[in-house]
Image (cartoon, rainbow, N blue to C red; front, side):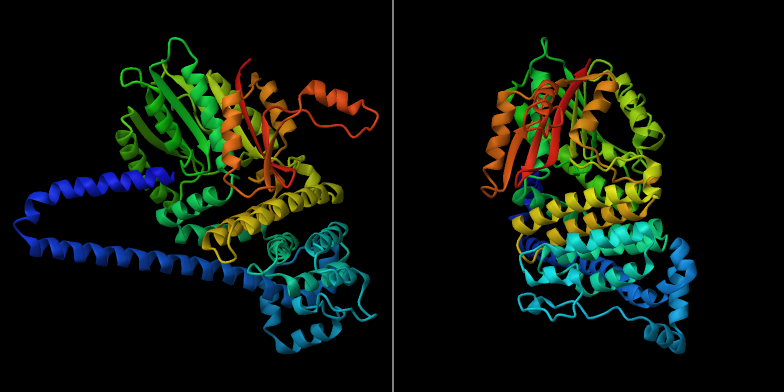
Length: 555
């Protein structure tokens, strides 16, 4: 994607220079005025973009701060019988109740959460003997305390233990911060926000408020910077891009005779940062006579004005880049109003491409389809009816796809919460290690993860867009839908290894998924344990699988 923006800018500047060259020799005054106007316009654009980012920061941080303040106001009311019986709190009621100073003082006097948790500067000092047992792990500054506290709080929420909820939420509220120096501070902040939204039955409303604040400040430049910076410092997204591009390219070039057209149906959330390298590869590996005509249809699961603005700019730049690479190219965008793509009419999208090799690219998009009512099965069935030559699937590896009814009982909710905490801990940890301490791009990625946590913890499971699955689960779905696994070639594997060498040594690695035969052999071995079967290849962070890439063909 960086190549795309650099080359397009070079071409754009050269085109402008060619158009104005006859006038520059005759009127230097107008040229200097034009340059100064361009500089002023650029400065104005940068100032507007900075103001938009500051506005988004103020809105989102204000929402988080209001949540933390609301927790302070709400906790004294947690002893009421209505709260204990159903956890059905209305934040508006709490604001109105807290407006009465006499009632607030009365409830605050009745609430005694115990001694305050130690500050960051006190973590290494010995704790007094009157501290509760859960504080003792603060004496070890290297211990990850957020997971322990959050899990305890989630258990208390699930068991409707009102006094315990009061105590732990007050404690987390004192320690949490989205700007903290440690990953634990940020995890505590975002998961506390989600737990509070669940308690107040305000998950969908909270998610809409956070998403609206993000959309209002979104711009093409900020989106581009975040995507490029993420790819530059972490292979989290680029790993899937390289794997999918390699599989698509080989599927095209290995066919004899080579098809004259390639139509890529792009279900992804990476703003087309994947495709410049594929177009470059086609331009270099094919002669001018046999270069296939490439069509890319990007399916965007949002119809918001912000998404349309960003995709219009991306579409214009992709068209210019295709011309620059001398690849016959067409780029189009289909906006879908929500993340549930199962209702999309795919047949009409490629009706005019009957002679083309159809490639379906699914990068971090399938989990956005809610698992209830067999909607994921419906989408995969629609994809199969297209009879694609190849389907690439890249997903973050986490077992969050439980039955919708499971979230209504204690065990189901704790399963989702525990696995979500594990996955997002690894994600935040990787951002902490890869990005500098002060980074607007990292903050944008963390806020997006915070919205995902609210969706996962506080929104109805049947409508959630964050219910990820493991490689095993997706492999079963693909096979049941009529697809068979395509192994990645040695060339693609070598490209992935070369990619990982660009990043921090010892942090990132890759490993192949375990086949069904290997899984059965492992499960029957003396040491037990066993390994899950699946297709494809994993990106691992500190030996923990975080991203899974795979390729499929019709069975």
